[in-house]
Image (cartoon, rainbow, N blue to C red; front, side, top):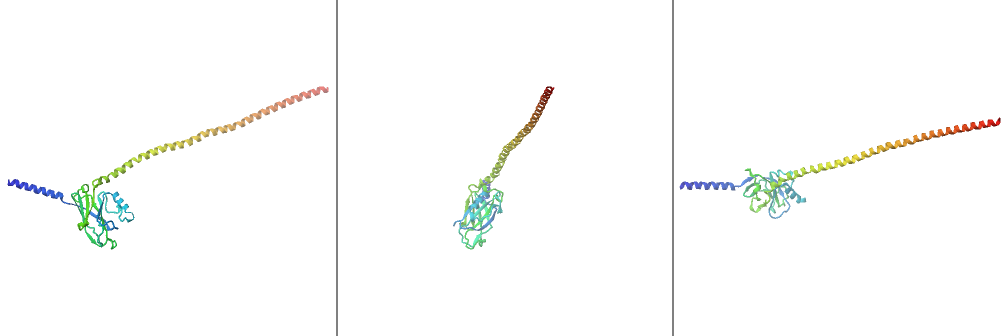
Length: 274
């Protein structure tokens, strides 16, 4: 009986240890990308999370002239391995900014990050009371697990709980798949694009050759007419030479007739004198 109780106690202890290790927080690498003070964005702390570069660019463009954030190409991160989180403190006491030493860990369905205050204004005027920090979070925890697919929210606080702010990740699980479709989406138009272009070149080529062939056919048809017209123009001189020879023949016959008549006239005149 004692042995059975001992075995049961050991089994319960093992289950408790496994449950404790399963529920333990997993560290996630966090890196500060930009910090400073923003214009007034509200009195309460806020958190925004950008899973894709398009989401980040959309937010930057929406700020218009008040945009102080760098482009994605200027950040020390890539969206295929990390995500971006923007934390704004809201109205603060002033004279301090958020430090760059940020600790983040994932437990259950929430990633929690903590930061500390740093004396100074991080280059902002002394009257600036709205500190912010833009940080990147690795998609893979330090133990190699991909935490983003099971995450529901990302939270950050600066030393005290009253500075805590969270962002809901309702579509975070679909974000990795949404980043992968663009290659297929872009590849399909690229694959379909050559087809219309090829057909367009095929349709253009015959029309061009046909148009080019008709002019060449026209000159060839005009060439025989040109050769016929010189022949027709050369024929009138031949007819003129024939007419000249006929006139000369008639003149000779008239001259011969005249001579015959003259000889007859002269012969008659000689007879009369006798």
